[in-house]
Image (tube, rainbow, N blue to C red; front, side):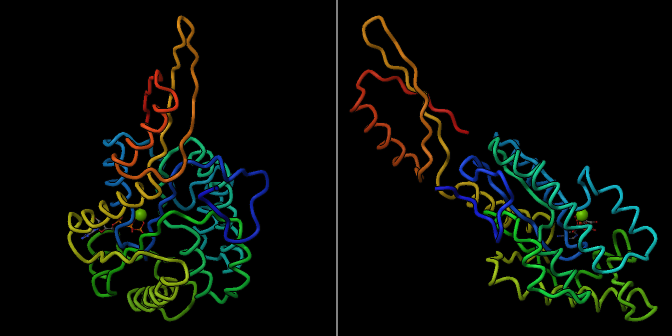
Length: 283
Ligand SMILES: Nc1ncnc2c1ncn2[C@@H]1O[C@H](COP(=O)(O)OP(=O)(O)OP(=O)(O)O)[C@@H](O)[C@H]1O
Ligand SMILES: [Mg+2]
């Protein structure tokens, strides 16, 4: 059975059985540390022999550049912005994320449909309509919601990039003061994220510690998410019959779990084919 599923109406012509990778989402409000941790996780996963794709908003070939340009003018309306982001996401899903999952990559994505829905809801969009718009999204393996209290967030943002027009929700016209608008807007987003925790199965990660502390927590969670359902193992079998030998490849997709379970599995195969030579390769 395929591990992945769509939230609603499926993207056409996608065979879910083919998707062997892992889809891991980092969510959280602006400036909470997503980029920092995606960078650290990517490095750690690659050092452990995994192929990793990292992706995030406005990086699509189809809509990324135009979306950034459209935001420069500070005139983009809520619905147009939502649909522009949905287009950017759809293009990345179809042309980056799904191909990478097919090739067995671990995909680390900086935000997913949840941020897009939260931002659209605070701009007046109907949550039911949004769920339909994003029905084509794949359900991720794990969603890590990096959470800090608003006061810590303000300090962190002040110490790094400062307040940005969109990250302060200035388009919502809550007032002329960027600091006050940032606080109100980010509090609103936090409340929307908090509402999604249960519905969408977020794992809440306390992001108020140091970068090292937060990373340590995330690393062990990602380790579990990657190991979930066991490893996909490719068994390469060589059968020797006298002078003849044949080679067979078999995918073992079901849960294998820890090494002793894998050994049992192999012993069953060896019992059937006593002269089989087994070469294991982790995908
Ligand atoms: N746990 C932490 N403690 C203190 N500072 C942190 C922590 N995590 C990240 N930072 C700092 O906060 C700033 C914002 O981090 P980062 O750019 O990773 O956040 P982000 O969520 O990707 O932000 P954006 O929404 O702007 O993309 C950076 O200067 C980073 O070094
Ligand atoms: Mg970032």
